[in-house]
Image (tube, rainbow, N blue to C red):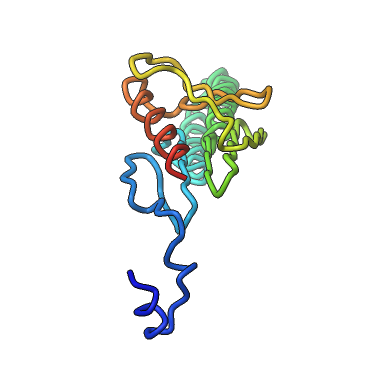
Length: 178
């Protein structure tokens, strides 16, 4: 675009000549302005809140049936119903604790930020974009290792193994273009 035309329209040339990150096509990432985000999360069909309501309804039904049989004289039904409720509650609590697990990779400017959340614990690593190495090579189905400046982080746990090479290629492409 000629600079003269820009000044006639009242536009600033520096605004229009930002690096064109949005011209890239991404399968896994979302682009907002000059920022590229990959949000890789566990495939979770039931939210922790839904799981809590399901557990409460299961408790009501199980204790209702156990109470009915206890009133009929079957005294051993109630302890087993309580045992069932405790074991299922522990399983649901474990599921709920890991339901929000995920990985977030953000590329903005010269920084690549990787955040891994597992069971409520957040692990964060920052890399200089120009020093990041992305492995494995395109045919490997193992986790993707992002390394640089003496640190490394493995990502891709929540992506199917056959799609990991595509994710690694996408991250490499974004690192080169940003």
